[in-house]
Length: 426
Ligand code: UD1
Image 1: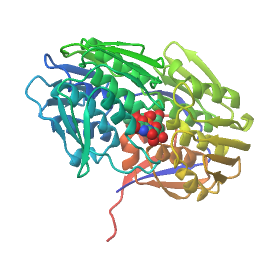
Image 2: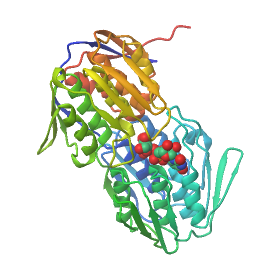
Image 3: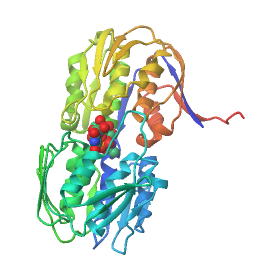
């Protein structure tokens, strides 16, 4: 079991950091590689993350040939043979995001059986919107023995209004609609940059998807799709995490290739706090003086609102900025567990349902803490850089799902941080 050990208190991050391709983009892109019956698909700028290995296993489990060249950060997929239409529990249970294979398998095979994803520590994550949309497209859905079975010889275009702009449901329905008969209109669709990235790949494969990035998607079904080449979009959440790391440590860091437009909601809040953010030719520079930063109120919302995936990291910043800040989490209902861990470091905060009041700027002390989920793990490491003394962060399996070489990147910027493998005591 690995532990990250941080000596905090005097770190000022300086230099430049390179960002990987986005985890939340590559997972649905891999699901899309199931669709083409001709030609191979090449994905470039693929991040080396445990979630990517899990999704690779889901795709390979369908009898699809997949090669991951980690040195080149490329994945080559050949789905031209006969494929299976069942995604087993063994892999789906490891990662909720694997539910996005349901739409592509059903669209291509006329039948799909995918294990129902299990529980999640950040809150309830139903898939009703995925299933309702597929039903409107003519699929018969049943749920038996923990599996979802969907059948439709040929899906039909439909008008779908989503109660909530779910990212996963939008991706599933968009992929299913590419091979349906006729036109599908998805209203109140998710608008995240990762949705746009998926639409770009689908269109390269021969699909007809219009409106990605707006709240209305119009997808005209086609007969067949073919392989394509695609660069995965940069990870705005990884980029944002380093922006916050720089802001918290009175740093001066260039986040290379970060895309301003994708990080606009975060940049607006950082600027409101007093952080200096500038767009440069090769990325975004963040400069800050922690003693001068002001507390703010932030509310998470679907894109283009403030991302829930930046909430934990932003509360780490709120914890070290003098004064009372407020974080309102509207997307997931149980996403403040990191604040309980930060309490061990001396943080004063109050949580009432979806709102956390954070009394920032008190002296924080290093402590042993446990990651409770992916973004919480990054938040705890960032807090450890500012807290005085030693912080030990465990349960790094969460971190490895979404951050590649996180501690090496922070170390190169000047953090006093090590990752050690500890032998478990029996
Ligand atoms: C994706 C991201 C995740 C991010 C989240 C919100 C990936 C792989 N994961 O997750 O990192 O935190 O978007 O930005 O891209 N909901 C329903 N019914 C549904 C589907 C969702 O009620 O059928 C609700 C969920 O309970 C949740 C909210 O919608 O409260 C957001 O979920 P959704 O946008 O679907 O998130 P994911 O696609 O699971």
